Image (cartoon, rainbow, N blue to C red; front, side, top):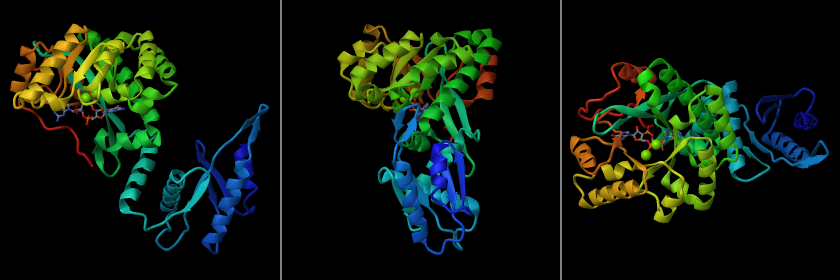
Length: 385
Ligand code: C2E
Ligand code: MG
Ligand code: MG
């Protein structure tokens, strides 16, 4: 409110100041003869918001990034105008604190596409555009489904079902991943909790959820997770959080502290994409984890590349000595499956068993007895933009 008052003091009574949501304000200047009028107002607003606010006796500082779009014959539509201002604002933001930027139609198409993706992504959760698919994790001896991995997809209004590889990095950079991550955790706990209550056989299912780097490092993670567990009633020991090896190793000492805090909640922990980061094996012993997931890149080559076969066998053996479970990722061929079984890898996932499935299809599978007979690899469920 204080910010709104200050912004209002910078414009004429005939102009409009609106709050579109969160910490975003929009100013509509009527009758502007030249862009310099708009930039002068932007400078005034930046100055006005630069002095601290006094809240309960404490001084609070804030930065301001402003994007400016001028209406023109090409930019008539109000939505397009707002989007152009938004793109300019992101440009301002990325050039440092307290800046303004004018929308530049000549901005490279690639940058624009990325910014549009970023903008659209910020609305994806509120517009209910995210979907979760679930890939079964099976017992490699019996084919019984022992768990599922929740994998997020984005049903983009124009581009269709987008792979997380397309948008998770963008969300990670913009910070939207925190909201997406919360949504994923909550929705996955709700879905799987419902199946567990309905199908007694599913009660033992372990739900695996991926955490992004930013999510794992966010100070609110433990509180948020415990709130989600409380509100959904999901059994903590049935939830397994996956962090990639490179995220875990980024600041290994802090990782240990965070992992212990998560373990206190009773959840299980897995190192994802194992073998692709730079693990110091000493840390593997110090991380309070339950599971390592062997990265697909090794599994793909176990029958063709003796080095990858040796590494895979060594990871399995090492994990067993450390009393960790091992899950092999990306099993596509019978020969890979046979290799893994021969080396006592107990669990795995991959197209040979099942691609990630929409919730209804997974429920149907559970209702048929929850056992999967391997078949020839099926195509993935989505397109990469
Ligand atoms: P990941 O956690 O290693 O997930 C496994 C990926 O391998 C999934 O890709 C899955 O569809 C794919 N996959 C499974 N079986 C096979 C197979 O037999 N062959 C091949 N070629 N691929 C297979 P997806 O769903 O595209 O996800 C990619 C990555 O995006 C995930 O890798 C994970 O790191 C990230 N991700 C997915 N969902 C989330 C999420 O909710 N939050 C965060 N932070 N990251 C997520
Ligand atoms: Mg994973
Ligand atoms: Mg993985």
